[in-house]
Image (tube, rainbow, N blue to C red; front, side, top):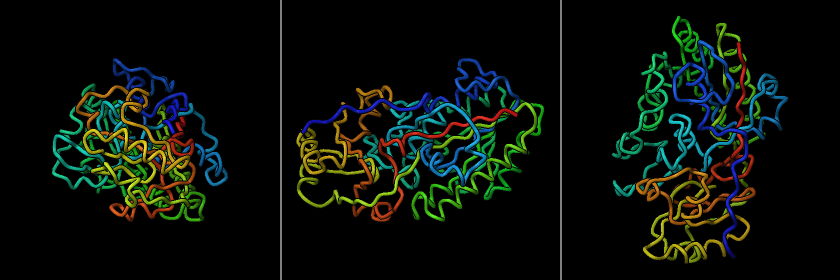
Length: 369
């Protein structure tokens, strides 16, 4: 069985274009306003972790405010997972440039595995992503830049790598987030405010998309967006987007058991819907063949060069290309590629990371005040 051709990203725009569009609208030179925000004084971007466009369409009755908003279709990154997506959001670049290529991945220059959401490694954030973020570039251009998010993320490795720049307003609930946005926009300066909401993703992982808990969480998101919209001063633009969607997984395949998965392999990383497989020297083609044979229609298995040539992650310099698995397995349907080394993650109901429309298509909703 040969590898199938990787798909073209759906959506009119990429997640990587949202921050550059905000910068252009705030009159920072060198960027294009693809969202047609006009020339507002204030731009607020609320990123709802785990809200896919497909889920919003299916459960619109639980989120009437969001359902009534409009905007272009948008696509997240490959893999469709939080650290990779936030890398593209914060830098305006695709993963081949910003260098965060998975939920976990091998970093050859440090001979270590990095898990960006749990940056316990001694790997410096600036070594992974040294280029200026759009937060920094906007602040340098005279924009008043503020992040409104939980205190726990203020100095995280992921924040330092791809979301650094401007001020940080700690906010633990919806009320505090609205207050943070009001404080950031009560100024005569041009402002950009980033609001992050992680709860929907967490509940989706545990209870599944469409569950009672998830629907209640979606309604809380809707109420937050409504409150933000009503609190904004005149001459403001509100953009609501996400980092990825989610799919409920009921089919599980253990990929750390059996010679068909382990022969020729020295390391597996990533997550259950998007696995990086690092082969022993000279073994990548054989590893790819065995994984394709074992998984069949349950996953799309490609070698690194096919991913690089697809353009889905943009051009990648050698240093970043070396972080990517020699072979990659993207789960299809409701499949999770589970492993004992990430047992807790593998057991979760809601998953993402692969290329289904449920995971890949994200909302990009715009309200001009």
